[in-house]
Image (cartoon, rainbow, N blue to C red):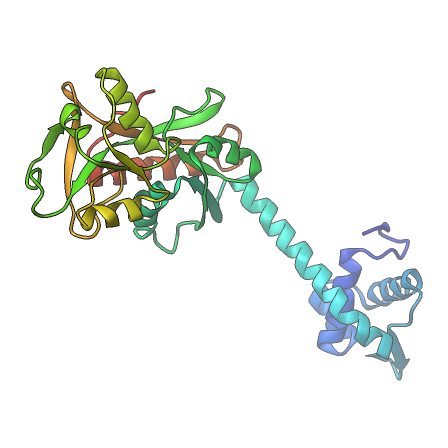
Length: 305
């Protein structure tokens, strides 16, 4: 707001004087509240009226009362002062590196099976979270669109801060009565002989299975694609095939790990954030907590670096 100390411009300080007079009902009480002399406060209020071109107060018998114009202007002044105070507090928060809220971007499966359970462990002292569901190719680009922390399945670009989070198995889900029910592990060569219920090729679990099948020199038998892992599992529960996804089990299905040689088919999760973010250390701490959470839930991470 323009205006210097003595030129009567509409400064926040002068608006605070206006609010003090309106709230206390007298110049003397307002002067005590804002710690200035009565003549100085009166002079500042006259300067404010001159700069605005309206009369804010009626002056009778040494007392001030708001005019109709003053009553109309008062909520505007109060809003401006409140917003300025909030801006100062926000700047102090930014300087301190505190993170009052955090936006996390991730694929839908990661949101449901990893991020949502992790957020359920947070307390009142943690930032208020928001989550964006993003397609895998768009994950790390979301950091340029306002996300604070991105969780992806490919190693982040080198210019980003990063942390390996987890290695998650890709499961072959079968219903009770299937010949694999009760097994812990099945070779990829047996998997391709089944009618597979798969996700689209851009999904991380599908990409991991495609790579394992190609590395083994194999091809698929009959397959059906579904847009969501929940539907793939539902169709598997109906006995129409084997769902290959990385989600947690649903509909009473039995999870069987898929093997490729001596290594299970899996996907890696990485956390990434923008270097130089004003709350980089707080974001890194949250990423480490997520890695620890996944370690307890799924085992320690072994992702590619």
